[in-house]
Length: 202
Image 1 (tube, one colour):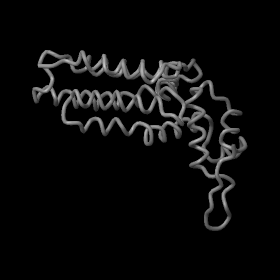
Image 2 (cartoon, helix red, strand yellow; image 1 turned 90 degrees about the horizontal axis):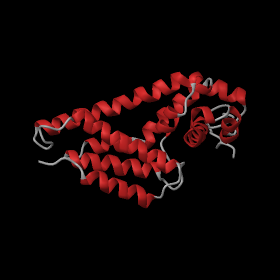
Image 3 (cartoon, helix red, strand yellow; image 1 turned 90 degrees about the vertical axis):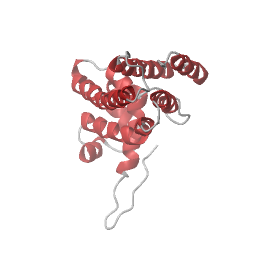
Image 4 (spheres, helix red, strand yellow; image 1 turned 30 degrees about the vertical axis):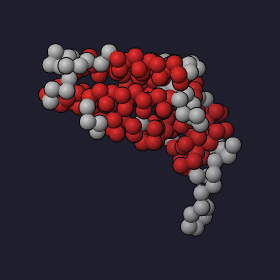
């Protein structure tokens, strides 16, 4: 499917970069960084290789731009979750936001970050490192939010906040792998409910 044509003053562009990038994101999301071939990308984006290189640089540069788009449009639930009034509500919003992202009807199932971090070989090590580094930012924000909750007495004093954060991320990553493997929404919702049942309380 060809990317939408953009209109602009003067000479029209051959293609719409925003639409082409969105198409590239879907390819990376479905196949991961290494699994997405240049042919897959150019066909989905509706452009030639020279046009891709001219607009986005090489495959690695294109992936980074797609990852930026993914974070802006698909991971906004994380910042919203951090604003919840209690730590448990933060955790529930994160888990349910991840579920919606991973199981969206019109999008590939799973998580772009998880797919691209676990399936990278030596040649794509820099991509894997960047995906993991970006994940640390969200993890640090969650640790800070739980530290605040602990100071406020919302989380018991004996709880290891970093361990609790790691537990949540492990659940979210596990959900992503299962979603990509075809596990049903109902099964993942059951996993969320079970995870919340063991949430530490005073």
